[in-house]
Image: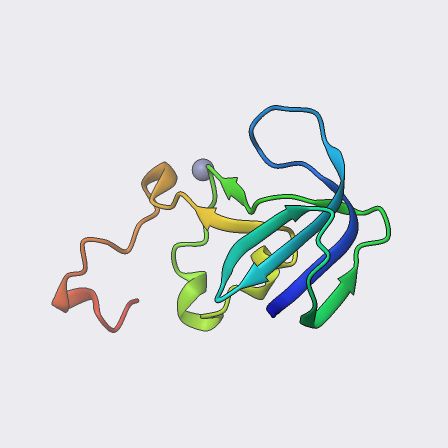
Length: 104
Ligand SMILES: [Zn+2]
């Protein structure tokens, strides 16, 4: 049994191929099936022709310090962003220096 099935979506798999209509099955946090998924799942989401896609990479953000206030980064997740490239434009808390701990 799968943990989750997202049904009836436009699947854009990130390979550059055209999207296709179908389902995505998830088990143990990983994609286990793509296409017409006939298995059962503990949870089912009807995407109702919304796009199902891999997480987006935000290649230029200034979220370096946001993670301290919002450790689950909901604002990014709700936009589909699952990876961020930080340290842009000279805004970076790293390398961490003990003398700047209070400032951070
Ligand atoms: Zn910038």
